[in-house]
Structure formats: structure tokens, C-alpha cells
Amino acid sequence: MRQLFNWIAKIFLLIATVSFAHANDITLSNVRLTPLEKSWALNADVQLELSPALEQLVNKGVTLHFVTEFQLSKKRWYWLDNKIVDVQRVSKISYQALTNQYRVTLGTFSLTAATLKQALAAVKTIEDWMVLDATAIESKQTYQAALRIRLDTNQLAKPFQVNAINSKSWNLQSDWHRFDFAPIAQPASQAPGAQP
Image (cartoon, rainbow, N blue to C red):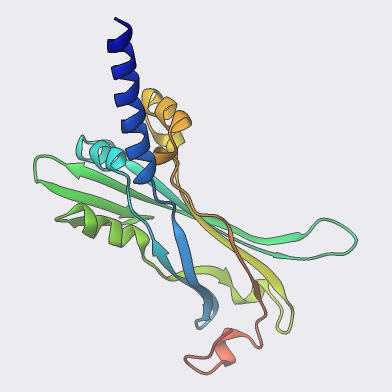
């Protein structure tokens, strides 16, 4: 009986190790704010892979909710930082068994994808996301910007939330990517292609 227990414990440990090895965090790169006519748009490159456990979950019909958060603040020496912008966008991936396709919802926009890889590519796209009105900031000031993406496990059914608490492979999120942002001029007066 003891050997059977040890054998089961070893299998469980092996499964947990494999799940952990496949658990990739989300990474962000080339994060930048680009001027548009009367606003600033956020662009970024995202590396995101699902663990086998999350892939299996999607293929069983469970919807995954990804939250992209952007914040912009201005430092104040006499008080807490002044938060100017705090916005988020929710992206969802779900599998439609009847059509054998994946449905991706990006805010109010939705599309279908033939494969999970294509669906993830849509979720990973942060391109021309208007996050900041030009009138909310002053030129020649320095602001602190921050961006992160995370899987919102609170949107999962309760049994899956318990798994998310106990397994790193279910806790998929990026660190806050922080950078300084100093607009030289209002977007309308900048030349096309100019960098902030």
C-alpha cells in the first residue's frame, strides 16, 4: 500500500512539474505611445503562450478573459502621484464546438479564428489603442506610464478559481512595464511618424 502511495505521489509531482515548466509568463516589449490627431495611441509587442492546462480548458468551452491595463500618472512632491489615465480593455477567447472555431472579443469588436494560435495572436495585438486624450496632458511634462496584461481568473467558474490559486500555470500575467513619457508637442502638430 505504501509503494502505491509513493508511486501516486511521484506521478502527481511529475504532472505538477510539467505544468510548471509549460507555464510561461506574459512579456511586453517595444511599448510606446504614438501621436494621432487628437489623442495618443498605445502600441506594444506581446509574448503570450498558454499552458497545456489552459489550452485544454479553452477547448472544453471555458472562456478566458484577458485584461490589458494602462495607467498614466504625474509625480507630485507634496502628495500622492496624480493619476491622469487608468483604462483597461478586456479580451476574451472561447471555443465554439458547433462551428469548430474560436471566437475572440476585443472590447466591442469580435472575430472568429480557425485555430487557437490565431485567436491568441488577436489577443496579443496592442496596436493603435487610443488610451489618452491630447487635452489631458501638457507638452514638455514628464509622465509615468505603466502597462500590464493578465488572465482574469476571477471570471472563471469557482472550481477553476481554486485551481488558479494553487497552480502557477493558471496565473498568467505580465509584470508592470513602466516607462517615462514626455510629449514634446500636442499630437496634432507633430509630423507623421514622430516619436513621443
